[in-house]
Length: 72
Image (tube, rainbow, N blue to C red):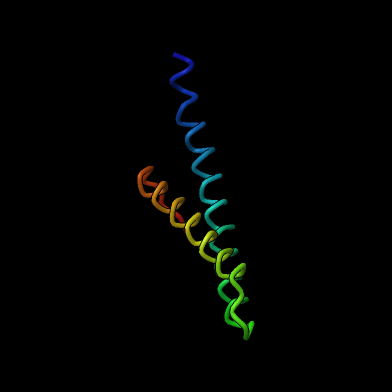
């Protein structure tokens, strides 16, 4: 029976980690959008970094939706 009591605690721990990671990736994505707007010449590496951070954020967003996690 002790194992069943640990699962919600472990899930809550990883849910918190997921929210923290989502906040970090959202900030990274927003910063890359700003950098891309500031720079006059289009640089393929910056565009790729922005798209990668956007994809990571939306992947975690879908995972949070599946886990029914509500953020701030």
